[in-house]
Length: 266
Image (cartoon, rainbow, N blue to C red; front, side):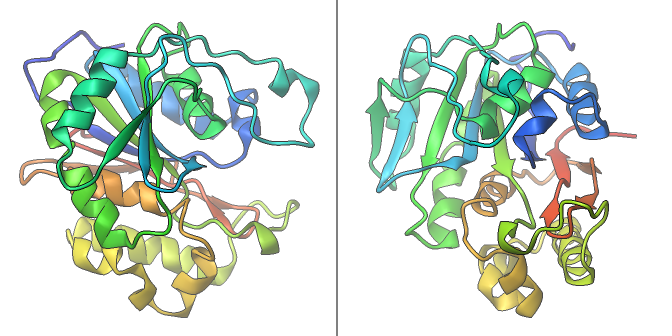
């Protein structure tokens, strides 16, 4: 793991988190998250925007000791037995509320960490010694709202906070094929189109994702897994490098593609 380096700007991540089973399986995706974490400066805290916390309005966790939420069903018992006892950071939560001016952000002292957050951070920081906050998604609001809200989080990057968007670029569970190791043609096309737009820094098209054609409609039947990507992209600086990892689409219609901004991966 990298050394504390709070005087420099922290990188930003988007993580395709996929199945909760990635938290317990020793697979390429979990190993990818572990490897990326080893190259990061050690964060003062992590702020996660997960697909699995949708709220009317916007809230941020403010518990001293957020519980581990098992927000799924039908999986093996060992997955439900996992606890990720990372501390919270109520002071940072209050500071974040004051940082955001374009939207009202409420403090939630009861909410814990959902699997979109802890399944990834458990691989990155297995000692659970980095304080973790989550910011909720108001999925009734358009992409532009989320992109502009995320821009207001930019000062946190210079304060040792690792901001992680956690979702999936392609996420359509209704037509998923559990026996398929790769993606449907349209899923592969859309994943590549999004990567191409990211490389070109064409954020406008990605914010207005409805305009990206029929592949987008299949890839994003509901917005909660896509919107965390916009939080990552909104925080991109002019000198931030772009690196993709875990770039694979599985089960037909789930993209595991992840990216870092500001950290080069060779």
